[in-house]
Length: 99
Image: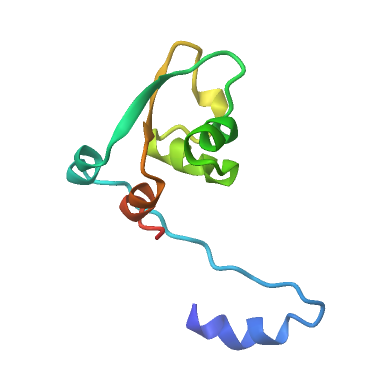
């Protein structure tokens, strides 16, 4: 927000930095259809960060899989549930509006 810019600038004497919140959007049907995905059957012990590491080589993108499936945590998935994993991380980030 513009009105807080001056305030933020004066509040970093100890090196802390404030980051703005990223506004994500839900991909529309066309964005979902054109993006290559794979289905994954959830198993007991699976974690988003492990799947992100397996598919993207970067565990910090676990939230892409969570957001894409509208299941914010692993607690929202049961063994045997099928989730969809976007294959191309860059295109998935574009569809989510964060790239």
